[in-house]
Length: 293
Length: 163
Image 1 (cartoon, each protein chain N blue to C red):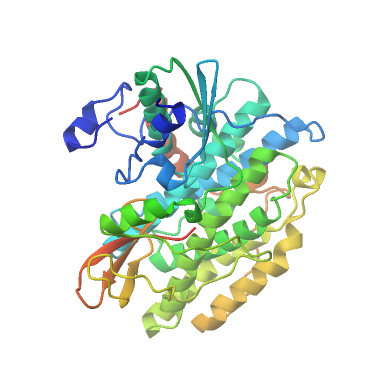
Image 2: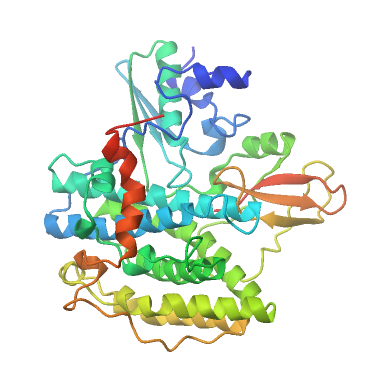
């Protein structure tokens, strides 16, 4: 393809789509996909869905800010972070479908599952803005908490039995480091800013804090895979405390969000916000299956 | 004689067309066997939408050069790093007004470091060469670029951020 002429590059394609970013075919072309023999396949599928759904759902939430952020650079930043997470989600959902072996690809898993089949933590799905009741400060509080936790989680997966998950984790770590720095810098800027920005940053933290407990509760699938999220709680606390101390903020003392009969996001039990989120995420594909543009 | 490696190495990056995939370090291996070509690439960012284009462009170029059977494989591990951008690639970036990344070296063992202030790394302005530049935004027009400004000639410019 020649790029001498910008218009040519749009039409001079063997493929039917006119720009990259649409009409994805597969997320893992030619990646070594041997399924490890010492891991239970059903557990591996479930775990890939947990990780993939965390990334997919937060990606959707961050993308909601595009054109609504306080400044243009922030539109770009949040969209970039959302894109990184979407990339991680594609790899993880593709892997889930592949190990499951029932012919479900990333699109089938993202667009055609119902709410109760999603395995993301509540922190990823709750409304933190730009819509009703949300705030940019709340979004930054969530991004700080989420990426700090994810970094610790991915770090613990570098030697994981499944090579695809381990590779996604290694790659994702580099991206998450940028995401966390971005959020941390905003938390410091707002927390250590004006009275108003401090008040809103503190309120944002208080909004997301009840959802922290769930991040470190080991699900039976994780236990069977030999993973223990509680093992990286200290690392999480230490990073959060460093940021909050620089921001002149304190760790909220809020009560953890209630579970339903002991179940939460990892069991497919979600908050009210999830149905609305999925409606927006899925309606196009469900109305016009396979639509590309 | 033009080898499959020569052809693959000349394919340009869809988002940074001043660079070839080889300059960018995305092209990891080209193996030619009985007229069949196996190309291995490593994506830059997980969500980089250009990865599929890269694969399609490689296939198109190799087929045009007479290699009928081409397979493109993706290798995720080890993960891509800006350290894989070649010296030639760095020169071409600077010529195109994009500040190349500095070398990061292998990641230190232990927790991922937290950065609370924008990096103070000295990035020279690709237009006037001044070392006095500042970061405007760590996120730019593509996943791999940050936006900076020169404090001397006042021009904004892009910088391939280290990863």
